[in-house]
Each structure stands twice: as C-alpha cells, then as structure tokens.
Length: 168
Length: 416
Image (cartoon, rainbow over all chains, first blue to last red; front, side):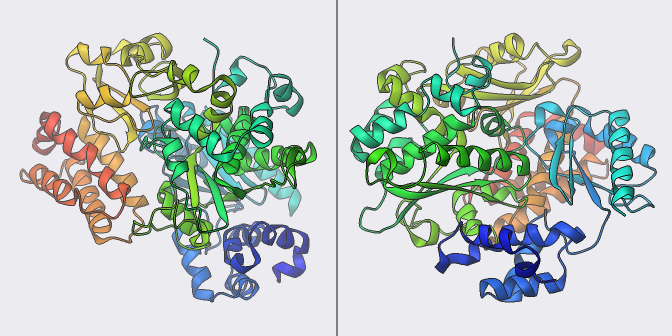
C-alpha cells in the first residue's frame, strides 16, 4: 500500500499544515493515516512514510516505539483502553476493570476470540471526573466512553461486534 | 458571578459562531488587529497579572515580551496536551467554548507577530481535534482567520496537530520536538522557546486555559481582571476536582477560594461522608497535604497561600483522598504513572522512576523489607534537582511528602 496513492487528498492536506522545508512534522499524522486500516503500522508503511518525508525508516520506527497510540503488532479491531490511573482508581476503575475481564472472559492485554476487542489498561485520559471510563481506538479513530458500567460496556461491545461482522 | 472561562454554562450554544459573535465574540481580536500595536496588547496582558495556567504559573505578558524580534518567523503554540492525572479542564473549554480559546490564541499570535499558530493536542483528544478543525474552518469562512484580516496586512492560520499518547509532550520543549516529528523528549534549556522554539524560531507556548482568559481581559481591561483574584494570583481559575468527592468536575472560581468551599460547597462533600485525609492540589505531581488538622481546609487556594501549607497550586487539579485510603497505595499508583511516562532521556528520571515504582509496588503488595521505606525516600531525594525536566523532578514530590507526612501507612504496609 502506498499512502500517497491510497489517500492522496489526506496526504496533501496533512503536508499543507507544515512549512515544506519541515515536512518531517507530518510523520505523526501520516502514521495515524497508515494505522487506519490494519490497526497497526506495517513495515511497508514505515518505509513509505520515510520516503515521503525524506527521513530514515529508523526515524519513523523511533516515533512508533515512543508513542503509546501507535502499534506495531496486530490486535483486535478495537482496542478498549481503560484508564486505571489514580483519580479513576479512586472512583472504582480497578474494580470496573476486574468485572469487565470477567464479563468479556479475557485478561488485560488479551483479545476476544472473535478478534473484535483487545482490552488494555492505560494511564490518565483526562476524564478523571467521569470514571470509570475508557477510550476505544479503532478504524474510525479514538472515542471516549465516560461514566461507564459493565452493563453499558457490554452493550457497546455487542454493537462493535455487530459492526465488525457487517464490515466483514 | 458569571463565568469568564466556562461561559458555555451561562450562554447556551456559545460553541456556535453566531452565538459567540452575538455575545461579543471576536470584537477583542478585531479591535487588537485594527486599533492596537502588538506591544500594546502584550502590555494589557502583562498589567492584568495573568499567569500561565499550565502549572508553572509564569506571568503570561512577560513571556510574550521575551519574543526575539531579531529572528523570524515567529510561532505561537497552544499546549493542549492535557495529561496530568487529575486535570481535565482544557478539554471542557475546547469542547464547549472553543471560539474563546481560539480567539485568545489569535490575539496572542497578533501580539507576538506570528502568522501561524499550532494547537498541539494529546492524541487521545481525537474528537476534540475534529471539533477545533470545524471551528477553525468556520472562522476562516467568516474572515476571522486567513489573509489580510479586517483589511489590514496581518494574516493568520491556525492548525491542529495530534500527539500520540505521551505525557512528557506537555513539557514545552518536548512538545516542540514532537511537533517537529521527533520523539517527545525535552531540550536542554536555555535557550528557551521565546528565542529558540519551533523549527529553531522564536515561539510562545501557553496552555489552553491561559489563552482563553485573553479575549475577556482585552474586552474588560487589565484592572477588571486583576480585581477578580488575590494580590499575587489575578483572575479566575478552573479547579478540576476529582477523587473521593460526591460531585467531581470543573469549577471556575476566584483565586482565594478555600479548599473547604471547593470540596464541600461545590463538590458536595466526601463520598460516604468520610473525613478528608489528604489533598493533592496539583494532580499526581503534587506534594501530599495532610488534612489531619481541619484548619487546612480553610486555606485559600492561590499560588502563595498553598505554599504555606507545604504544597503548590500548580494546575489546580485537586485530588481528594479520604481516610479509607492508605497513602502507600496512592504513591504506588503515582509511581506507576511516572515510570510509564518517563521519556528516558535523562538517567536520573529513567532509572529513578523505575526504582521508585519497583519499591512502592513491593511495599504495597506486602513484600517490603523494613529498610525499603528509607531506601525509597533516599532514591526520591537523590533525584531532586538532578533531572532534565519537571517530570522527573515532580515524580518525587508525592513520594517524599507521602513518606514524611504519612510514615505510619508505609510502616503498616511493610509489617503487614
């Protein structure tokens, strides 16, 4: 896949944000674009981005490795990232996570057998007053889900599974 | 009192361009560009006493006046990488009162002669970035952004840029590195951004809340703003209240409001009506303030007074800890955070946060050795004053104050 060929409009729009002599600034938005379809960054995508921006593949890989929202391995179609940091934990996020694991039948870091949801624990998402909360990271970007209960979450999971099934 | 920052709570639909305009929106920007010189704008902000709302509290107008006018172009960057545990104010502003923030950013850009400004958002704020992109497009369409604004020769473009989940990018030089397409690791300072910032050019960086104050300061004047706060802390502040309270949330209040008023009047009191055991006034990077003496709750929240009880107000992200919580658990959670978020550039922070996290986990899980608490305190104190940036420095605050002020909780965990 070549980003410039698959998403010509998006690539042009991203590059237009930065001075042409500093196009390296586009590496992060381009990585989001590359991650859109597979849910992770492939080696080919890294090479492609490096070529587009006149930087080395190692430069791109260093970015992928540094930031937590880029992934270099395949996981579920949706990553469910539950905040278990201090303020959320003070509002019961750890118990919520335990109950969610039981309901989904998986442990933190695992993916549901149908490949739809990967459950992850993350640090602060800046929604401390609305815990328990999590974000879903998937083909349509990142979405916040606040003031959650396990029942509400399982309804969301059912909807995600349905939508994943329809996409297939 | 009507809100200055969270105006969406008083004016429905202020996130719509027409409503914002009807309520005086963009008049301050237009007035600045058409009738004021850039340094006059900076002087008004300087005289207002506005200090940076990101945590450090540096005087805003003074920062703007440091811009190096011998080196061009200039840039302005809004720090919207809100990642401090306990802080969630900027997101509410950007989601619900976005034009006031963008207008403040535009005014700052005019004041320092920048024709391009960037909003650096934490990657998780994907939906917020989409909102801002939409609002920026509306402003361009209406002639508030773009070329030759209001018939003058001043032009301005605003762009959004998403980070990708790294707390360190809230540190201004790490943010710049990230915006340049590199790992978000802090630069050695000096030089500071007003002389060497984005792409090596003079750059002013302020927090979202800071910019959001600016249109009202220009509209109503420096004296009006100064009159809202206390002697050393002018204006209003959004206090993000979280932890063991009944009604957590953002509360915009004048500086000088007491902890008691924030927690009990606005926050509805403590969950299950327990007693407050400790307060972290500036998120996870705070010192822990003991509340054994109820009088602590009557302390005024402003930059100077909070220091008198052994803490810093910082970003005013007040986390409330009640009597049911053991402090060794609090420290374990904060250390897990800092260990995860250390960027690894300086050895002190990379190794120090790892060791502190390792020790707090061992103590909290009941495998601690009697000497572990002193060892932990020693590691934290050895780190102080030796880190490249505030992340490493602040990671020690809760550890040192937690052990010094709540030693019995740690001893209990070790002897369990």
